Amino acid sequence: MPLKADLDAIDWKILRELQHDGRMTNVELSGRVGISAPPCLRRVRRLEETGIIRGYRALLNAPALGLDVVAFCLIGLHHQADAELKTFAERTRGWPIVRDAWMVSGESDFLLHCVASDLGAFQTFVIEELASAPDVDTVRTALTIRRVKDEGLVAFPA
Amino acid sequence: MPLKADLDAIDWKILRELQHDGRMTNVELSGRVGISAPPCLRRVRRLEETGIIRGYRALLNAPALGLDVVAFCLIGLHHQADAELKTFAERTRGWPIVRDAWMVSGESDFLLHCVASDLGAFQTFVIEELASAPDVDTVRTALTIRRVKDEGLVAFPA
DNA sequence: GCGCTTCACGCAAGAATCTTTCGTGATTTT
DNA sequence: AAAATCACGAAAGATTCTTGCGTGAAGCGC
Picture 1 (cartoon, chains in turn orange, green, cyan, red):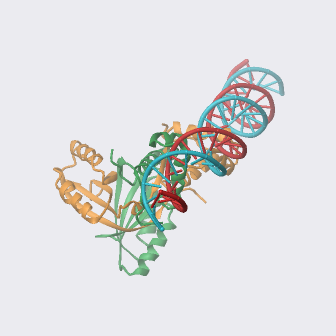
Picture 2 (picture 1 turned 135 degrees about the vertical axis):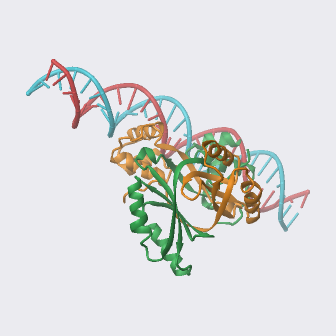
Picture 3 (picture 1 turned 45 degrees about the vertical axis):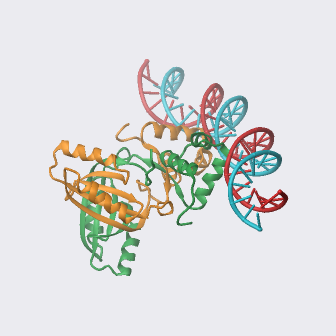
């Protein structure tokens, strides 16, 4: 997994297209980026093998699935020793309500992206799991009202 | 787009598999969920048409693409009037560094998920774009150190 | 300057997959 | 109890995937 891959203009087009529609067929993709199917497939394989494409994911509609609460939690720990950070990071992986988690620097130590079925379930999680975890000092929550922007991770010109 | 769809166990399996690997072929998917290919494809189409599956996306490796800074910004506006909220929400869509944005309730009004090539680019964005936007009152930033958890939006048992 | 190597492209063909059509059986409705 | 509805699975044709190979351009050594 090279830290800086050498990609040409076609590779960037492929990444842009697959970020926008990860299930596009290879022939459709090859047409959009302007080459024929075989070299297009070889490029996609190479991007996957080098780890530039980490995977593919279906985007699901949380409210339609009965998940009405999306929130972010900013967590501060008592101490920022490596052991404590590792322990809390491991703990987040056992909480299904936590979907993504980041270790951050600044006023807090962790940022958690949480999804729950309803406000009660989320509050129960915050009080009984999060705030009562041994190393947790502060918990600040931000309930989401609505998503305002939802692009992929990487910005592409045009 | 029904607010509460009636999904059986097989539909939930399909969603779990496609959230984990959105590029899986239909025959592979049908085998995993225990039905034959045609009804499996019909179910996937139905999930797409009803909006339960919102789309598919390739997950890209930001550091490998020269994007070394991922950060979150909590934004407070001077006033929370509807017009101001809408204006700021619209503004986020014009900033390529902002990848996802949420309107939130709590101590802040917006949460921005930002990706930039380096710290200088991010700081320039915060100072010259964000903090100098007309309605912005407070900006708190949290630079990410590393991703600790990265599952899809929806949790599945087992 | 010449020739060798390397690399990526595109054509073509076989293998795998997708997608539609149709018949069957189970469940629900009247 | 009969009819209607629904989803499944088998089969077949169309599409797509995937591999193997030949061609042409760019880089390198002699």
